[in-house]
Length: 450
Ligand SMILES: Cc1ncc(COP(=O)(O)O)c(C=O)c1O
Image (cartoon, rainbow, N blue to C red; front, side):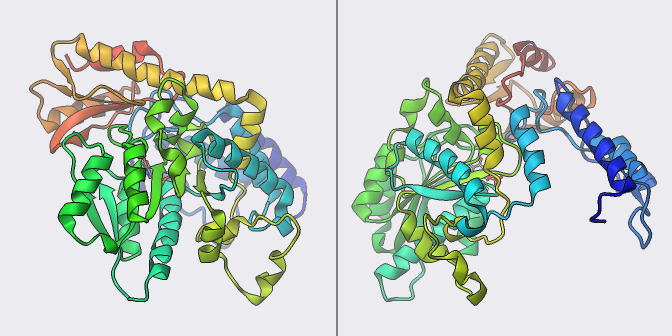
């Protein structure tokens, strides 16, 4: 299994040929997702047993049955949830990293890889206006980043007091579900900040704190820079000011929308992010990196290190090396893939300007789609888009009609655009991210609602 023999040679040829073909798809087709397991088992069942199989047979099972049963998140027709659009450069470099078994825990083991990752983190921190001291690591996703950051926030609150009290986190109603999960995992309670327009402001936060009457129980304030469902950026300047007054941790969840920092047309909406104690942005979303990759930054990484550093006799050697920066010290993980490197390679190849253009393209698509919605009397825009998400309703439709419309579009391989809910009502939603999504496709999707 570990030697380069005739079977290995054949696998190298056939797997690389498959990967080459996948890379050359332009555009990537959608394919269909959910399938009956029995249908899949017709080809795949029985492959796992004591004896092995011919690699081309196994690859054939993948290519003919399993791969087409996966909706391609990187298709320009994927307009649901939050899509993906990794650059070809980032995908190629990801393959290289897969072949290299880089153990991204420590400076001792992987200084070269970590130095490149840190350059990307620096670039993002600079874009956010965070201080030179800022730093962190790449984790698997926004959920992992939010959890790792709020672990630090809770620990800081605990260190401020001797009591074994239960801590709370002030958070808006539209914060991502991973924040809700994190609070549950960490046994933190929410102090929910309600607003009329789903955007947390400093004033709304202050009002919630005053009405609550127990500000000393607040360990952190979480703001979102680009809500998942609607792309709303909270009032980061106002919220950060209240967090400072309270003397509590300020975390910004930019997993989806943080990439807008690179887009001049919306950069001002992020003012105040420079005050974040921690900030998460997912390059596997709108910074065009492959899954799975989130950048987690701390204003003062030494605080995070004091919480996350793992101590074990066998790990003593990774501490105290000159120039040391151990990603394991800045999140809950130990072993980690050097998942920031595909972004590093792609940024170096294409330049930051190409990223700015691609992000602006999605913002422009959202504005143009909103105009198309306005121009049709059977549609209503729910709110003007701030980033790449557009929410709209088909006048008179019941939830089942949205589902039929979305199923039909997927069946016909036109688009993947599942409905969502807004204030309890089923509505339609575009999530633009891929710079090659054509406006003609947007019009076709809207026309099918007439
Ligand atoms: C605002 C926000 N936060 C957190 C997450 C979770 O990120 P991940 O899926 O990478 O764990 C998402 C995912 O869509 C998100 O949009």
